[in-house]
Image (cartoon, rainbow, N blue to C red):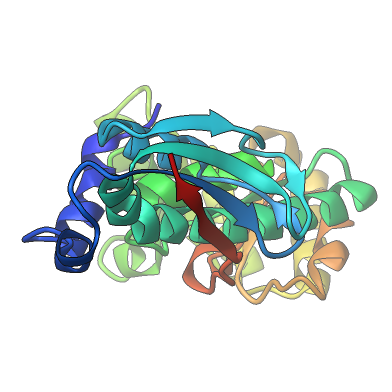
Amino acid sequence: MINLSYLLQFIEEDAPFGDVTSEAVIPEGTRAKAVIIAKGEGVIAGVEEARALFGHFGVKVEVRKMDGEEVKRGDVILELEGDARAILLVERTALNVMGRMSGIATEVRKLVERVKAVNPKVRVAGTRKTLLKPIDKRAILIGGGEPHRFSLSDAILIKDNHLALVPLEEAIKRARAFSAYKVVEVEVESLEDALKAARAGADVVMLDNMSPAEIAEVLTVLKREGLRERVKIEVSGGITPENIAEYAGLDIDVISLGYLTHSVKNFDVSLEIIGKI
């Protein structure tokens, strides 16, 4: 579901007192046609967000490429028709949203395909390393990945700073007592703590900043102790497009990467006015 009120904040930020250029130059009531086109190859995303924004300002939108479709340079994504000032008011915000979301979706799709080619059961997930969660999380989904937690309210994830204050087993015990419905995940950096977390009843054990060899050792011991089937195994930290296939070859469940959202390479899209109507 598109959060229009969230998107309109970007318009308010971009034009707090109106678009003075268009108001000065474009006669009131001028109507125009425009298109949004792809300037490269990738997975398009943010189409529904753009449609909601333009539609809010009375611009008619025809969708030519849906969220999740692969596009190439020159493909028309949206056709627009309406008040010229409204089109130009929304232009940059819509392009920014589409560019960011498409960049995320494109990278996610690439990594999901790379991982699935090695191990079809492993999922690729994002993280909370973003301040633009409503659009970034949806972009991950469009690309075929898992969004992970949307917020601190969604699931219990016990991290190193929690464990600096409360012992691991006690933290899991308290988490279990806190809610019968929340997933309990624990971030660990050693074989010893992975075993403690599995024995103490964690649902998910996140192996953080561990090499493939170290993870393989953890998996071997968990299996030997009869603990592997009790937990999902997530790996995170130090994973890149170059080494992700090596991690995917292990008996794990999820690979999470913060760089999907904190190091986005924008996908280039452009709006072009075709003319007056």
